[in-house]
Image (cartoon, rainbow, N blue to C red):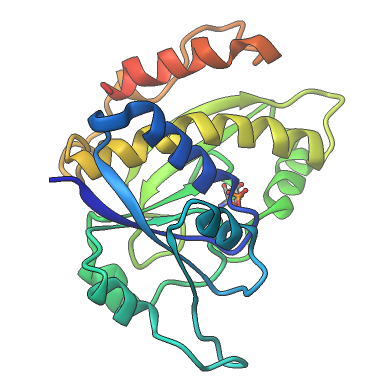
Amino acid sequence: MRSRIAVLASGGGSNLQAILDHFDWLGNRRGGDVVLVASDRTNAGALERAARREIEAAVLPTDKRPDGASLEQLLSEREIDLVVLAGYLRLVPPEIVKKFEGRIVNIHPALLPAFGGPGMYGSRVHHAVLEAGVRVTGVTAHFVDRVYDRGRIIAQWPVPVFASDDAGTLASRVLRVEHLVYPRVVDGVASGRTTLETCATANTDAVVDSRPSFTLLPHEDSRLAENIELTLGC
Ligand code: GRF
């Protein structure tokens, strides 16, 4: 039985798209189906991407716009097994986080716990990375718990910071890696290969690209995807 997945997104939804594309590529080997996309923003690109695929797209109520089914209602009525946060900018209510323990994941565009926490989202993360002068940033996929950006880490992947970078160039390099890592992580959790328990201890094989001259040249995506699959055991 495949997991029924809800993706929550506030923005363009490129991670949602990467998940859908990866699931297409996996075909019957995929661990889940995205059956719901929900957003707090009426104009989120993610909603359009869902509609294009004939996936149910829901706008969540906010204080200013209180109409519509609540997230809790939607998740329960659509019998959702796994909640995937993909650029979702609101705090998920603690009752939902509790109910979905081990079944709610997020992607963060830096190497947590650095450059995470409240207020650290979008380009702010990349500005902070550049200001700090670190040479390596990356992506972190993690389970969500009650503390913002602090749930158990599932996978991390490094991304180099170049002297010529601004927040835009860095964001797009990081996003490219997000698109390779997150779909594979989501499939792992959806299929039951990855759980809170399997992530209980740091598995040294599962977190790094060990090639020291890692430069992320444009043609390296497929090698990187292979490395990610090897280390995640896809
Ligand atoms: C990504 O950088 C993700 O790490 C962060 O929000 C951004 C979402 O981008 N949480 P998109 O909407 O998936 O294009």
